[in-house]
Image 1 (cartoon, one colour):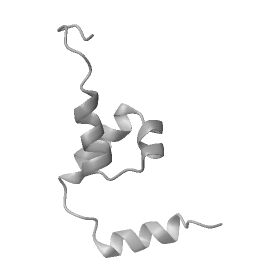
Image 2 (cartoon, rainbow, N blue to C red):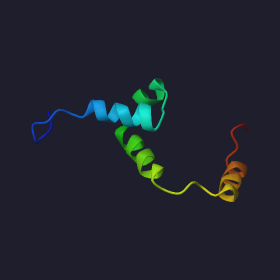
Image 3 (cartoon, rainbow, N blue to C red):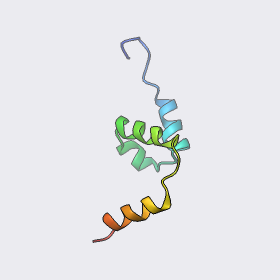
Length: 64
């Protein structure tokens, strides 16, 4: 129970993580609340421009 006497909103968090963000269950359950909140905050922004994405991909390649 929280300080206000309400249970943690697991159902809503699962709807957001699994439904809205479409996280696989394994990733959802491993994520911290802070990571999920940051991802949700990013959902309301404009997509990253392709040029910025390409620059990040060059700086941080998936494979060494």
